[in-house]
Length: 507
Ligand code: BLA
Image 1 (cartoon, rainbow, N blue to C red):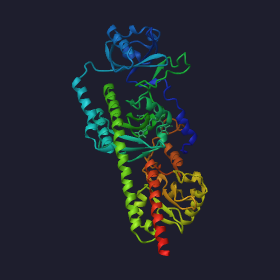
Image 2 (image 1 turned 90 degrees about the horizontal axis):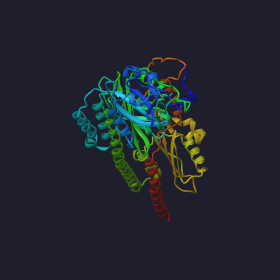
Image 3 (image 1 turned 60 degrees about the vertical axis):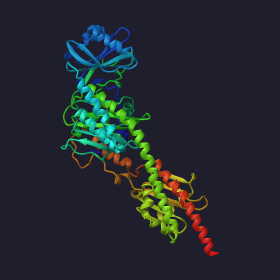
Image 4 (image 1 turned 90 degrees about the vertical axis):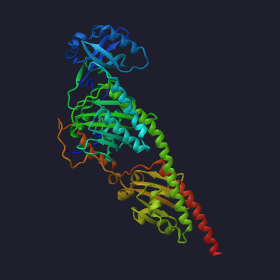
């Protein structure tokens, strides 16, 4: 199987996942116009659930489906700005209904439910969903507690908290799983596994359940909205049937049911709580709502905890820097030697794999770096660039093509210039990302061929994606850059003192 091309991956991003025109078979969709409450679009499975085929419903009033009490509940909810879950009766059955507006219609998702509702159960859910907030210690502890609570609420075999990086690839930060499931903790996944349009949709609509990844979707009638010339927009439908490419991905992972809940912070998709089950799993709507609330609470709490942990991180770096500067000032040896003796502090300051000190004489190299000659050549190039004295990149070879030769150790560069007049620099290097993280989608694992060999296969994207990160390091964070800039100021102070001492001893 040839690797997937960039073109095919960008094709992924163009799949209109909100217009696929189908729902999952565990529910039914009725869309009607207002104010006449006339059915305009229905899912093809109404006969099984209501005893009437779509042709017998389309163009008919809603009062032909729901008894007056349910109809009143529904219209009452529609008069409110937001609606919760509605318990509706139709054809002698009970459904949980979730209405929303879209394409000028009311789109009503209906899922069959058992007769009684259990208040103890609901209270138990509230306890569970608040428990992570009470127990958690720091961001990691919070995420772990969230994974455990979602698993307890839903009984998924594996629940993960997945965080997006700046380039939209992601990492599994916390996991709660059945012992018999493979662990995904610490694994990284390529950005293309969750394409841009899906991330945009997930920012607005925060929970989706794929109750049976192998089930055939149920089409809509009519398939195309006459007024729009395209299928009904299902962005807001809780029953939306998902992309067949993603279903193939789930099948290849051995996943029978999947649910994911968005973690949104300040309007940006920060991560997902991703759940897997080996077999189909129909999580009741009320439980899904509880998980959604939990994700919102966790997002809020996380923002607070992370602010605290960023301050702690800045304090840690400040401490590194103070230690470093103290030791440099104490040591009688020449400055480059003194610096190179503090390798651990110097690398820890910015989380680099190597550092080169260009303080006048030959470059001093610490850790994994390009050769002296390459470093000197790089510094000359940097000196010719206009900048405010700092430069950082995750893809050095894009800016400076000769760096492609040593991308393995120095895909990432964080450079600070010590003074304007001479090319004196501190250069921190980071290795190519493929070497530093554990990628999921193990290419050695055999892939079960999906239907239609010519179609893009999710697992094949791994190889393509490896190509896209060739020559890239992990991103430098604002804290890394701040630490480098802070260290420059401190070092300039030390250099001045050394120069003064040198001048005195020469005098
Ligand atoms: C959707 N991909 C998703 C979703 C997840 C992932 C969580 C949301 C839907 C769901 O809840 O199942 C990916 N799932 C993961 C990852 C982990 C996980 C990374 O558990 C890690 C632990 N997928 C591909 C390729 C394409 C692709 C190559 O691998 C495109 C060609 C597409 N993924 C794709 C699409 C969706 C998706 C289109 C949206 C599905 C939808 O909502 O319709």
